[in-house]
Length: 159
Image (tube, rainbow, N blue to C red):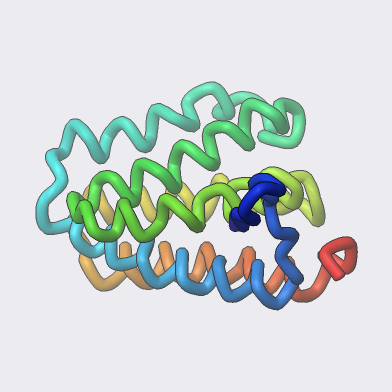
C-alpha cells in the first residue's frame, strides 16, 4: 500500500509474505462472491468473453507465451470481479489489485502454475456458463486460495 509522510513524500510500503497471503485470501472471498453474482446476473455474451481470453493458448502451452498468458490471467480475474456487478466489491478489490497482480505475475511461471491455471480457468468459465452458482463460487475461491498456498510454500523472496 501507499504511505504519505508530510513534507517527505509518498512511499510504497513493502508487504510481508504474511500480508500478501492475507490480501490474496481477501481477494479470494471477494472474487468468489463476484463469481456467484455473475452466475445470477451477467449476460451470456459477457461470460463468453472470458473464454476468448484464452483462445490464443489453444495450440500451445501457456508457458511458451508466459507474458501474454500472465496478461490474460490478470484480465480474467478482473473480469470476474466486474461480471459480479457489485460496485462495492470492485472498489474493495481496487486497493488489493496492485499487490495481487504483482504476485500473480511473479509466480505464474513457477512450478507449472500457468498450465494448471488455464485448466482451472476453463472449469470456472464452464461453471459460469452453466449458471452453477455453488460450483463457480467454490472453484473461483479455491483457484485463488491455491495461489495463497503457493506463496506460502515457495515465495521465500518475500521475507
